[in-house]
Structures are given as structure tokens and as C-alpha cells.
Image 1 (tube, one colour):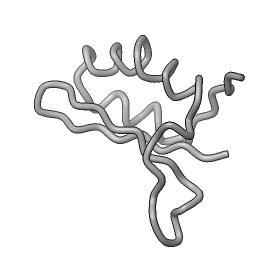
Image 2 (cartoon, one colour):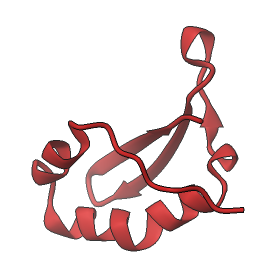
Image 3 (cartoon, rainbow, N blue to C red):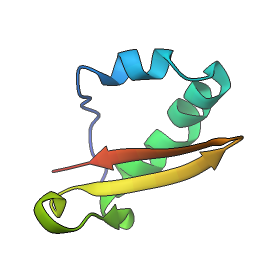
Length: 69
């Protein structure tokens, strides 16, 4: 079962701040992986335990994307 996309309003402005090749990789590779099964990501701890964190490395960037249900 796949999930649908829903982004925080600040997400688009955050994407504008990073390299276009990284944005392209997020859209073409990583969003599909996250939407397929977000629970494969790392569960956060404490008060944020309802969120999942997905990380990947691109060049000098270490990027984390949060997911929730």
C-alpha cells in the first residue's frame, strides 16, 4: 500500500535553498521510497516518537526528511 504526498508549507521554500541536483534526487528517488513504506525509516525518540526520519547523503549534504501518519 502506498501513501500520498502532503508537505509542510515551508517544504517548498526549503527545497529552493539547496542544490537543484539534490532536489531532483529527492523527487525522483527518495520520495517514492518514503511513500512506499514510511515506517521503514528511523523512529524518533521522546515527544517526537510519532515521527519517522529518513536520511540520505548527497555530496556534502546529510538530508533528513520527517514523515508522520
